[in-house]
Image 1 (cartoon, rainbow, N blue to C red):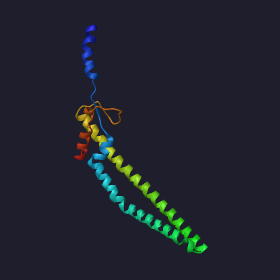
Image 2: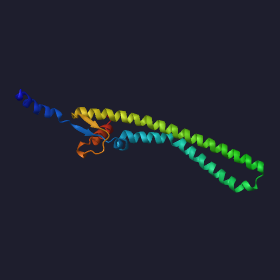
Image 3: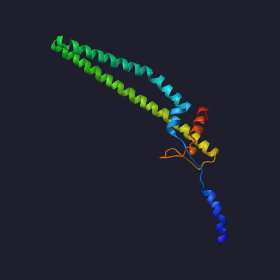
Image 4: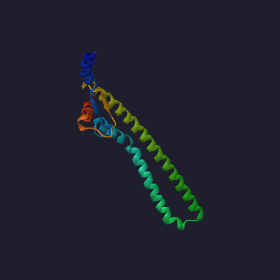
Length: 160
């Protein structure tokens, strides 16, 4: 009986030595070609709207400054009408800016999720190919020799 336990101990020790890896998701989202391509795609998709909103904001600022300068020379009814008009324009500007930000954030999340899903598939492929037992994405400290981020980025860039 003791012999069986002694023979099983080395086998158990070998089984217990798990192969562990780590992947830095932030680095993948900054450095991988698909992440950079998604960022460029979003910039192209939203640049026209962003410029329109910026132009509208500048026009509103200019109109407000002109009102500040000329308001004293206007009649009370003109001043109130102009003030109401500026308030309506500002409200519309704020609404468009909020919608733009919501649309941009929504699209960023869509693109981000696609990249994360793809990266997770690549991490799984690396883990299976190199016989890792576990690959972590979050850790307080990680020994650099356990980091497989470069392999994942390389595989993502290669289009796997």
